[in-house]
Length: 217
Figure 1 (spheres, rainbow, N blue to C red):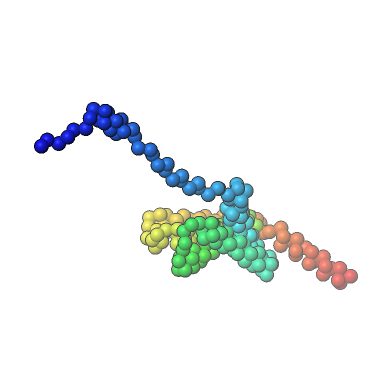
Figure 2: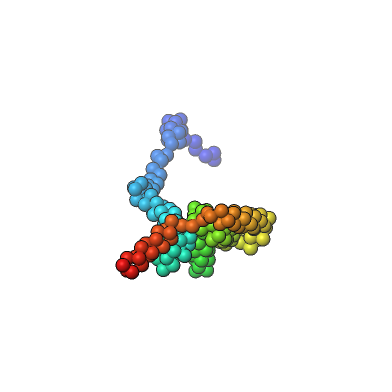
């Protein structure tokens, strides 16, 4: 017995139903991304970080170079500058970043940043006040070059020792040595011709002499 075939009308109805596409289920709406922070808020942190870097380096340079004039005052000034630089480092490298550092990495970052700030302070302060303190600045500038380079390598390089003993490190060492010899010669030339000396120190000496003279009267 042969199977019974559907009637032509039923075949037409089935064909129409097959040609009608199934209703699409609406896709789940994607979650909206979080609204960005206002510009003034998102810029506040980096702004404070950069202020801490530059103000800290400036205070350190002033404190290191002017230290002989008033040791207590300028040592405190340099310490405040170092604290500002370290605070900026913590803000920029730890607080404002999504990367979480381990304890050893944090110690390395803080220690190298402290040496880096001192190196930058010696370099910039020695250059800015070379005519005021030629002999002292002739030592500070090359020492600042070496300290800042080594500290920057420790702070940022994956293998700091490899960077320090590389050709780049040798070039920095040669630069520091040449700078030292050149500045020592120039400082000797200035002193031989009566150059060098800081106005603040001269003013202090003059004021002390005047006070002593008034006391005798």
